[in-house]
Length: 122
Image (spheres, rainbow, N blue to C red):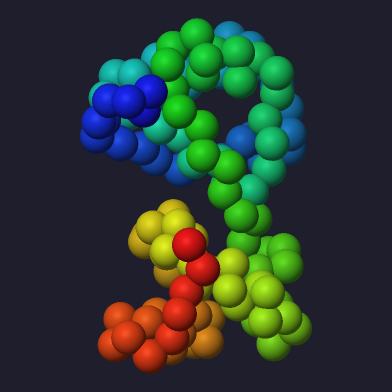
C-alpha cells in the first residue's frame, strides 16, 4: 500500500437487513473492527452510507467491494466467454479464496491454468 507491504486482515461486512442506518451503532461497529485488529472490510455486494466510508477513511480501514452472491455471477450457465475470463483472472481468484460458491467451470479453468493448459487474463 503506497509502496509499503502490509498484511491484510479483514472480514466480511453485511449491512443491516432492513437497511436501517444508525451512526452511533456504525461507530461502535468500527470500534469492534479495530478491536479485532482488522484493517480491511469486504462489503457483501451492496454499497454503504457516506458515513460508513467516512469512518473507514478516518480510521484507515481498507474497503473491498464484493460481488453480490445472488446477482449475475451465480447465473453460470448464462456466462459469456468474457465473464469466464473475468471470473478466472488471477485477481478474482485471490478475492474469492474463501468463497464457498464457485462454479465448476471456474474450478476447471483454474486447474487447467495451473497445469499450463489455459492462458488467464492478467
